[in-house]
Length: 491
Image 1 (spheres, rainbow, N blue to C red):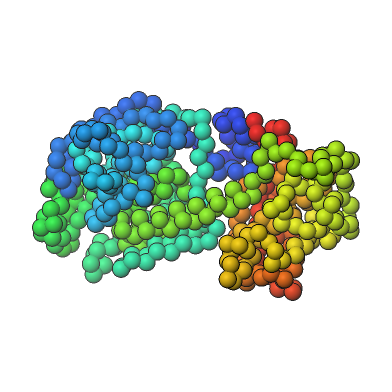
Image 2: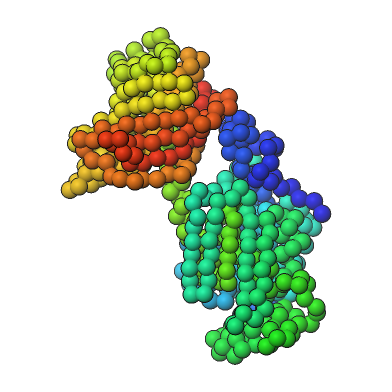
């Protein structure tokens, strides 16, 4: 069995997006993946577990950037529901997506198959409201995906990377996500009074998912069946597509596929719910008695974190390449002799503008106090006249934390730009990690920005920075950036 899959920790990268430098792909973001889809359509028919309805499902290839989308072909207008946490409408016993009056039940098994096999883009057409349950696992979906094959696509997809633990508690469920350089899931499954308590832990790759997870079947406890039926569920449930636990006995039409099949199915469900992130994730997730409700709450929290990371990354982007000088002084900056920064020297505001491309209202450094080796100290005088105080906040002005990060980023870039051969380039900031805001900064404060370059490889840099007021640290962060020629940056 072979897969076209690029591991997140691999140092080799297939050629992909032409508008990003290879150096960026190989060195700066080693976790980046190429998007993937299936090579040919897959057709599967059966019945839905909870609805009991007959259904024909077709999984289709889709262009890069599509994501996973469900299409109800049995309804007028062929309504579409994206597999996104924003569309989750019910998490009792399964994960249900909805948009308007359209519902698609029990999506986790097919989503687990696509995610587990590394498929990022696909259209799933259904002529009913629930994918087929098949044998209660994702095995058939996985086999069909493996049969048609997976196709690499041109566009990239960046995994979600966390820098601090994320914890979810709900009833008897505790799920914690820890920083990790791949996806690893450790799970504990347990019934009432500790029945059939099982523990399993896997690093999730297409190979391990296919071999260790995909065949694990859904299960329930005998005493739950009456409640499920009374609530209109498991209308399509049989011993051929589910395992039933009665006291200490296991009711099934075949032997257990794994000695710890129950906990492995919990992992299967969790991977399906994590697919609602719409991006791969790098984390070690430890789940104790996970549920769809808690799984989806974890996804919501991770989406919030990733959204904040994207916002911070955008705040560090260079000015547009079509920037034109607004006055004569800017024109002078472009034509004057380049400046080389020597150890022990400082930089005043006039020389500063000859080094960095930023202009009002986005210059977050007033002057550089000193440059020594791989360290630099800069000053930002915070005045009541700053334009952002009009909205942050009019009655209680506070210097925005994200602009403190921008001050760290601009100062860090100068360390890379200090060499004469690098002047005129752009410091393109890519990420901020371990960000902490400790105290508010007010008008009248003098912000002292201290940066230490902790890694430099070619034109890639990583630095640790702090902002202080009166010798007390108010914020800190680690920033990663690269230098690019202005002409190349926009290609």
